[in-house]
Image (cartoon, rainbow, N blue to C red; front, side, top):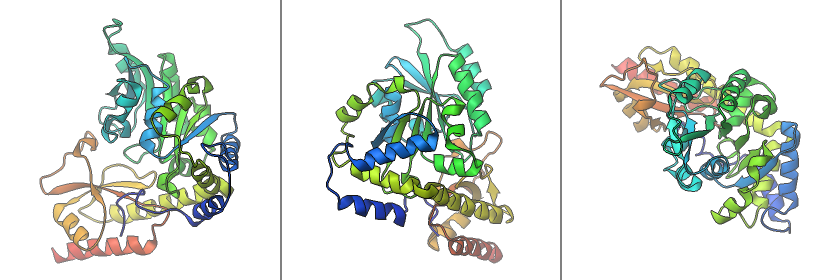
Length: 356
């Protein structure tokens, strides 16, 4: 009953097999190897365009280094109130950008919308150099509430951002889940919808540690190699990234893994929605569920071996207030989640309520 995080799983056998093959190879270092070159070619084919791609080990490094290429220290990055870059990256983006400010603009909604973006830009001060200048919009796909931006929504946000002089960054830690959810081409959910830079994460979806910063707007990439090296994120044995990405993308393996996680979340959501006393705070559109449950039930489930996190109460929808005896929990399914885990979890829920 492991629903703590999709970071807690290992790697898929296909990714591990590719790593083993690369491990037995002799090749140049620092990304100048056939595995990394093959991975970049695969990304160009996948996204149907020319692009610049750079590998790093963590999502925090990917987001922070990408944003450092997009803004100046005296500028700001507009984002969701609970965006990973503002809530869970311990000011790393501020450090890597030299001080650029994170500004939340979502106001209790599950996703940012163009109205919020335009309202902020219209109301913010423009007395430069005294006021902070907005320079980038960052959106997370899937969002921090487990919601998925459609290609139309991404395009509308990108258009509003560009009209206001902002470039567009996408934190794609769960981009695979979003693509699987939308059943669309990756290009339609990224550069064709106006995204300039995508941080594509494989770590949560079948890799051990593999994140890639993809510049669709190659003009923004000219300092990235120096920033990556200077920050200590240029891996000498770059094949370890390249091989994972080759194995992950091969034969649409990445989408199979993501679809499995999404399907498990949908099944769990259906079961939870049918149980009186439990409430889904947000619609389930990817592989995350946000559930309001009695504190007693949460303790009962955890004592039975279920793993999940209590979540930030501040990220609840604006129209929901948590009761004193309630807990706000996040459950995450992964590519290794099984029906038996879901059934056991729900079985304990039924047992708890039956005993009340």
